[in-house]
Length: 229
Image (cartoon, rainbow, N blue to C red; front, side, top):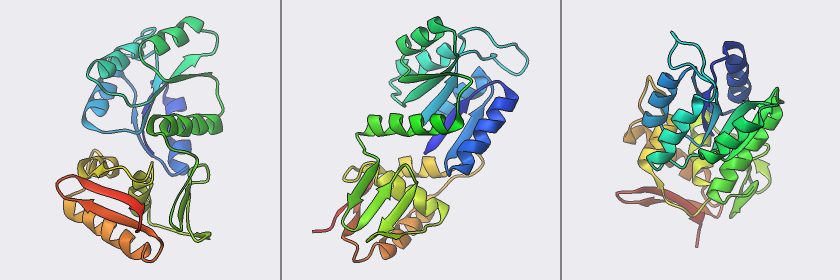
């Protein structure tokens, strides 16, 4: 998953960043409203983790409920990225305000990092209509274990090939635009070009040969993965 983490507490942000990155996710972290606005506008994310109390910038103190601003802005421009808000456990009014502003779920602090990842997966599945285990031909993806297999044998892939195939399998049979793939595989300090993306697709096609799963090119659009007929 490509995750946007918006949290002003330096210690908590670094702990969550390490935990989610170690689990294999690509995470961009913002510590204030200015960074959050910038990241959310220029990058496509699978899910957003949002602390509701944020400073405007690194020169200001956090304001109660200020994170609602960036959430409302995203929803007003039609951005439907799933959002989980992080709140103080005893602040019922914060949870209600977050949900009313367009959040999809909330988690009270303190929380278990394993639960964070599990609930993020559930949000993404819900938004895409995908299940924990998806199979196309002999190719299977288990999202809980982040494991691909071919005919019940583990399919080990380099990180970016893994992310491309993950996106095509979430869920399969849908067109995935080249721009979407490029944005999710690129960092803020790099840009993944069409040639590099096509190279990843070409290598995946070779690895899926005779698997019953095929990656098709949709000219002018992107790619889709479906069962070979």
